[in-house]
Image (cartoon, rainbow, N blue to C red; front, side, top):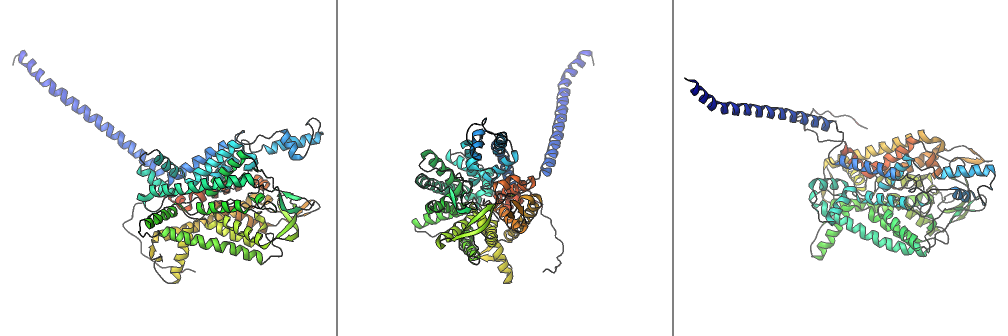
Length: 603
């Protein structure tokens, strides 16, 4: 073969070699990419296995935590908190004239007062506490919302109350519905976990119905409250008397005959009431200014009561009511869901049994009852709590009964009060603690273990007593997994409350309970009373109620661990023990086997 022929053959073979090399390079690149993808997938699996939160409830948990942390920061900024100056301090101390004209001792007192009055500035723990209370719709606070926050601070609080009451993902669903934007299946499932029912397909309609229902009630009640606040003057002193002969001050911020303030008060309090938040701008004593002689307003009290009852029924109940009304108009018959039947039954029973139980405990000790009697008191120097020294007159029975009815129903989920919570005896506060522990409906603005959980536990125990293998009610059988989860929720909640009581008593015993004041000295601190008060505080936090037996001075002086414990209880009360459990539980692989059974003797 000559050279010319070889050159021709080489030219023919060279493209084959080129293609072969290109294919080899391509395969090599594909192998490298595949190896990199495998490494990425392995890394993702490791991160996924390490990540402690589940996909649905974990997402809600993270969103709630983020909102509280951001809200806590916003609520400690000067300008959001009231900036008190020397004039405010002198007014609080009852001093007149200029600062320069005061004695050295008074000047030091004034400067110390200014420091104390501005103590919440940049106090992040107090900010997180208030944010947690607002977002969880609780109402327990360290700072006095009516005095310590400016209008901007109050706006932040009311936004957090509204978002917390409606639900973050629920709010997103409502917004998407308003702008006619498509809602993803993921958002629907998350919203179902937050405020929906059992059926994913009905979640959007259920949320829409609940939101519309609550918004109508909220606007209607705000309109009524505007006129009530504008035309009805609140009281500034209590019916009870200091040992000096003066009536106790309520530190009232009155909207009486003030158009703008009445308008803002109506919006704020209607939002707070429908969301069962318990926050108010009237005084540091909740609604007490509208429940004293000469200024008693049952109209305002009934509006609040109506709103928190509606707010505690739950979104699925509103949806069922709408379906029932719609079906009746069309001549059809639609049954209420088992959720609505159970929820409404338990809610109604507790609505009656609660007040009657408290009435019984107070009547059994009527001669010493502070609900049925006005009294004289002194201020305990250790806690700033009232210590009763003398009863000075019996209240009218109707007045006392309505005080019991209002405050005991508020203990279900609302947190507004018209009397000092410590006026109730230990037995009454224990009953209130039980009511707060139970709470109201799931998928509502309330907390606690929820009415349906309580109902299922009662029914399951009744089934055991009757030797039945299943739990049934209203011709329906409740799934065994739901029964197991109900018992788990009850057990974990009980442990949480018990541990919280022990932690707070150990951490803050020095500022818990008042003693007997003699010659200006505080003696005989009563630890037994403190346990009941701590139980009231913790169940109030867990039930997102807001009733607080402790003074602002005590709340400020509580230890860091105590405050963190209350924050945790409020957070879990809002999120729900069931959702909290699901937040840390990932789908598990089903095991193809199980171990042999062996019976165990129990008590």
